[in-house]
Length: 370
Image (cartoon, rainbow, N blue to C red; front, top):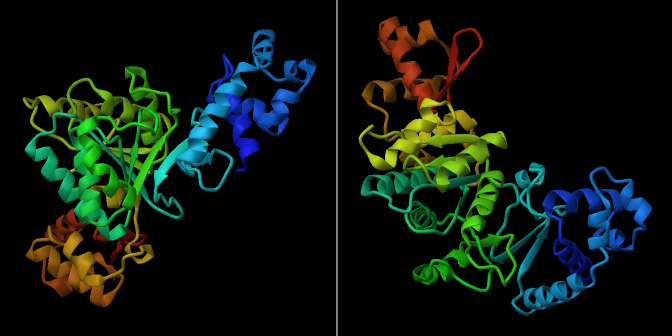
């Protein structure tokens, strides 16, 4: 995207009454932001939902002054700008009607052909929640996903740190401009974040972390990801908003259950109870529901895969898995006979292993190892 195109896009987004949805409508009809400003009034009136007030606002020349200031910041600070029409923009976010027209980025973000998972939760994360988050990311590391969160206190920063420790790319989606760090104590994490991914935001350099910005930020977290995982949440909170947005975008949502008496499990339990989230007890639940295939992953070290994914198998399950791995697809009855288990027991074992994501059923009562 050249400077002229970016300049006009920035100016369009500063027009009073033009948000992401309206901007896309205007650009899709006229071909570019520059063409929007050059269009005749009767051309604009022909666009559904575009009225005389908005057409008048498009004549406001002060928007170009604001665009010039932001363009100067972008160029001086070497900010990456992702346009919703370009290939470097998050692919899944392109399909969200209210996704940002522009995203500003810093660091070394590479979204090409990658699995993207958002991990969110309370800022008052418990030791149990933090441990679960770290173990989840450690177990998912074999698939080399990008871990997305909001760079806030609690679950967010635990997820970012765990991703870095496992040499995974991680992205912090911010509720303010790239000219500042919020919360300030997290400034110490910025360099490692940018070396292992970086930051994205839709907000201009003069945008502060206002309360309403965090809700807008959450739609990016939900929209750009294949799935959203809620680690811990109180009965109300931003992570629940993110989960609901993910539902609306037709993304998978997972929630970690907890005791009914635990304050920071109430939100997760409610998501599960109302069927807005899949119950998550380990990484295997996500792997199974998303149908991730080990063979297609970048990291294919067999020993790493076994260490990460099969650690929860008991002796009986390990025996069945080793048998299927050696013999390929097999009928249920044959598995029971060769492994020396009664039918009722092998059925139970196969179900548990299927839920753990280490085998899969096939038509005709066949099973195979993943």
